Length: 375
Length: 230
Image 1 (cartoon, rainbow over the protein chains, first blue to last red):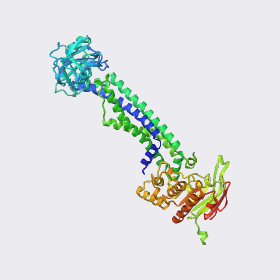
Image 2: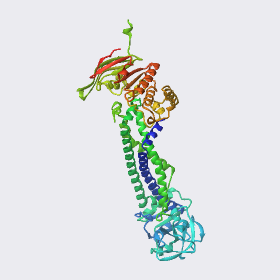
Image 3: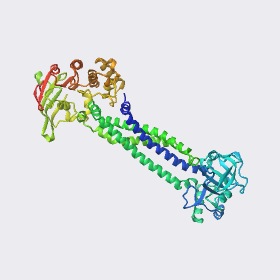
Image 4: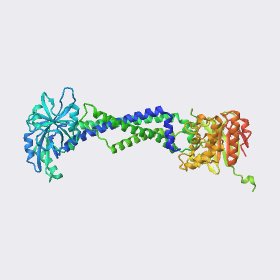
């Protein structure tokens, strides 16, 4: 029998306590995994959507920190940007989170300039694209079609105006898959924001290098006060919702870690108090104090490793479940990664070590003669 | 030079003192004792006479307040790691068996070897052999709760022998057994100790048990009244 088997044996001695401890740890780890994967997924979904469109830089208001920046009049800014070196296309985009049916969840409604490069990455699976800026039609993502239960030829009502569903498309970005897209002119009209956009998407020519992009950013900064040119990654990371999600995820990690370590601490302390005499026997039989510590640490780490593994599975299940909630569908795409899971398991081991330090030390410092007298 | 002058005892204790309460209570009060290799010594005396404390000090489970104690030329005061010393030299047998309830008889015997980095198969084979020798060949996988008192104490004897110690310290090993089982356990212990040439120091209240010893040491009020010298 090895030390590990002996440690496992000790944990199985009190199955109810072990199950409760593992459950408490796994709940904490599940919360960490679920919230972190959703926070990262939220960020990644928006970045993926921006990247998928082939946008090189995004121009928006400096102070804007919403998921979609607050709208501004595009005409003059667009004209100024168009003449910058290497800039090939400047395309406005308007977006709102709107209810498009009485009983359905709110969905993102995007207004994209007709015939712009923004449409190129979408794959039309059914129907057709809008014919021109004036046609009151929408195309909907495959996920949005499923959520809204809409087919080609049916109508959706947006802000009191009826739009024909002319096509259904697919996109790599879940945010777009769950969205309704119409032309920019239609979006400006239906949201009562004529001439306004949330962002201006810049596409640069193929000869543009990093220095040129930095130069464009500088020029925007100097020539267009109140506006900023940033990459999609920068836009997403300065987004207040992303930052709040990440802050919540960090707070969850901290709280769950503290709770996890305390749970392990309490369990191991109870365990060694119950086993004082037994530890005395082991010491009398020639066990070194370091071996006693190894035993206690092994038990603590086994508890947290098991809790960590169950927590990861639970966290993935929670995140996948949250994605399916009507309100969340098509807006988040939880991001799971093996390195993150390894990190979480590492955190679990760390919690076991932290929670086990004092109990292991206390057990190892017992005087064998006193421990043997313990009843 | 005479033989007596060359005689070097295995265990030599000089002016051993153990006191509590800042010296107000003396559990052991100036004990001098010599025990030879292979000797079976019984320590008897009334409760509170210091028998178990003396055994604990010999077993390095407790530190003396004063005095010198030496096992084959090694002064206890020079021992750096008491656990390693115990593992190499001493086997313990307790009155209440002190087996780990969640381990089988075989694992209980192996447990003192755990963490010392030796050959696990070798220890397992030795534990099986010891248990067979003690008549427990068909009880290897039984847990302590399924064993009789006599069987438990035989497992404890095997456990005391697993590391091939030089000295067995037994604190009332038959105290929890009926007279039949006590007799059997004592027979087995005496035989194994004799076979392997081990020194046996046993604390007992039972005069029938002490009668089998090579020497009986009488203790009272922390002092040896009789039998301190071989």
